[in-house]
Image 1 (cartoon, helix red, strand yellow):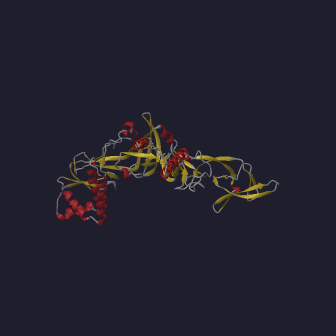
Image 2 (cartoon, helix red, strand yellow):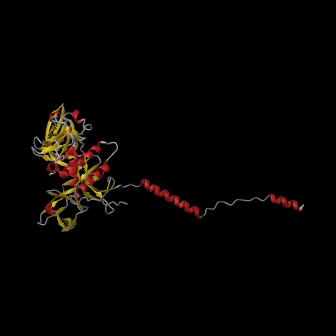
Image 3 (spheres, rainbow, N blue to C red):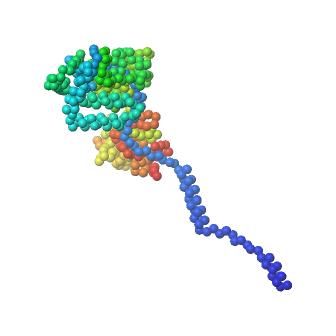
Length: 464
């Protein structure tokens, strides 16, 4: 019976589970979680200040134009057929009566002239040829097969440049000494000018015949080399002669460009292909209801002797200086002060302020200005210790009461970790950026750090 009771008591025992007791790991995790919440809260509620590093740059908002190249030129045609050999490099000037090329009927002269050119090769010529080959190698594309013939032409032209002085005379001597009786004809320049060995079909187009339709073909002008295979037929172009250094660029203007140029006698023109700039005189005229401009100069004609259309820009809406975002610029009121009342010592500007105490006694205080700006007539000053009504003293004993203010444009400089107002002179701006002067007194320098959007900041606010 006793055994039975024991079993009954065993069934009445209840095992109670112990409650959860958090350990140190739980508390550490909770602390880290709360810390992250606080950081996130601070991040989303704190004002974020964007900083910009000032850099030297240039802004140009001129839209490029395509211009027609007009020059005084004539095509000299062959009066016979045969194999042609030239004695004047392209881009060189010839005088009336100078020998330009010869014509023979069996191509015998070509080999002889090749030997003469090879005999005169020098170290400087080899170096120049290597440069031309390297340039061709670096710029050649399979889609531009015309570059091969251009390269071949440039190499021949280079050899002509090295030998042009004596090549014809040396040829005559060689013919005489060898007893060779090669029959050839020599051709002389009918007048003085600069030689070109390319044509494009626009040589006879007058300047007033340049229309909008012509300019629209700027990308389709085809340049053709004369006698590309060394043989020429009767009445084929033998060469082109440009007879004047004066040349022009003819472009069509929209209303904006016309308004900018209409009162100018000259303008600075930049050629896009190589960045060359020059001054050109301006002549306006109407053609087909459109404004046209003729830009004339006598410089660099030889450089563009084979170009018919050029992409150009004007320096009308451009400036060079320090580049900053427009959003960083705001204004503060500065007191206008005659220059006699400001003193510069060791590069720092200060004024002498009259101070009157409660008893009516007066004294003076030297105020070193935190910021100032100047033009030809006045200083413009600001400092926390100056207010309207304060009296300044000059070195000669004159007095001046602060009252008149002028808004001065500036930015917040934060090089030292807090906001310091610096005046700026805006020379040009577009929708996003401004170009400011790099010589403004107490202004900005390259690599300074400024606030991009200072709307909610004040003087001396710290920047984290």
